[in-house]
Length: 178
Image 1 (cartoon, rainbow, N blue to C red):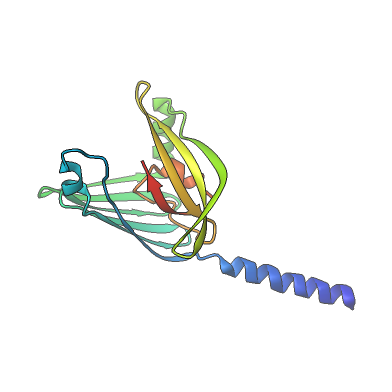
Image 2: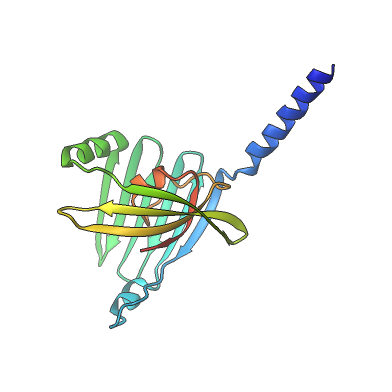
């Protein structure tokens, strides 16, 4: 009887922990540009807003800036990109499998991610720091400092940073510095 009680107690605690992770919601980002001497980049991109709606494996990312509006709708199999830039409306539709084939064809090694033990709170969530290096064409690379929380699950289609990076993080990105 005591073993059964411990089993039920363990089951109750484990379901409570699972429910503590958020799997549906809206995350709002604000983009700012710093270090631009002319201030032009901040005028063009600094007023940008990004909203990410997510539910299980489905994500809608909306980005609005003075130059363009973009919406990315994705699930575990497909991606649809809708873009309105300077009165030019465009769309792209592809599957995740097609994108992976293109990456392999291009010989992309993918991002390098270093997980650190550094922690900080963002909007009440405990976040962990990760350092990502994106290797571009030639030998060009970009470094990202990412703060993510494992308390929010979703955002696999997050469009503000490389989807390969997001897919390797065990939670939702709450802050990015490039």
